[in-house]
Image 1 (cartoon, rainbow, N blue to C red):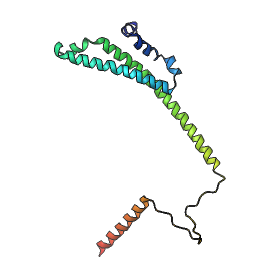
Image 2 (tube, one colour):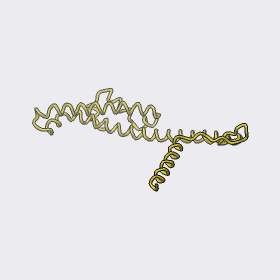
Image 3 (cartoon, helix red, strand yellow):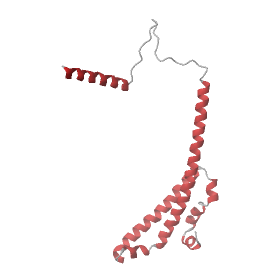
Length: 164
């Protein structure tokens, strides 16, 4: 960013854009990057909305859209500066999110593997319950199984009715 743009920004805007330095972004964690992303996005939205509103208001008095828009170049430049900063922060945030997702995935897989390995010595439960008389009881059907059985039964009845 050149000095002319820095000269247009106030102290808080300059401080915000200084935080977008690559070295400072590398030090932030995912939550810090998300917070910074929100702040930069709000600043970008502020200046882009301000530009659109001002330019739209001047179109009628200027007589043309191009003339109305050209009077607000400072606001456009600020919006573009924050747009570039938002792009950088978004890239770093995406990388951090991908890294944390990968770390979380490996952690969960390790926990699942440890839990699976711990359960090897235990006997597994049988599918059906054995009654005191020694006969195996039928398990309750799931709603999907009930629907499939009812569908098959009604199809059979329709075919029989068609034959009669």
